[in-house]
Amino acid sequence: MTRSEFDAYCAGLPATTNVVQWGNASVWKVGGKIFAICSSWGEGSGQRIAFKCSDLSYMMLTEEDGIVPAPYLARAKWVQVAEDGTLTDEDMKTYIATAHGLVASKLTKKLRQELGIDV
Image 1 (cartoon, helix red, strand yellow):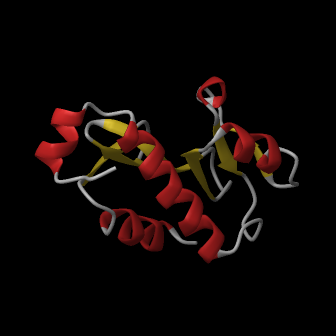
Image 2 (cartoon, rainbow, N blue to C red; image 1 turned 90 degrees about the vertical axis):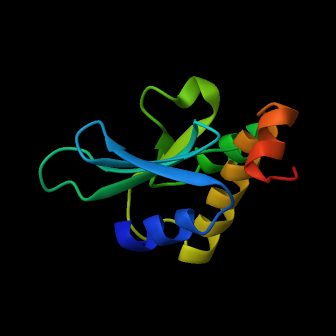
């Protein structure tokens, strides 16, 4: 999944916002909370996509070649897809949508209502 495909997909999820920070990383949020990041780590290293996941998904995904605990975020059950082709685009979209749902579900009921999210 390219960065533009990543951005387009995240933009289509409910009540999302995007900010570019941390050295040109595309950071996607729902209700002000981050659920997915696309960034480059070092010159020529290519893009990396990181996302929040469930405890079970975290355990399974970190056993896969090309997926690692996300730097600085692993304690919160985030993974980073470190190699292109590790996940299909459809699988990546499913995990990103799940990340969005996980983060949105932790927002207050009032904020979810304000954002029009029914979690």
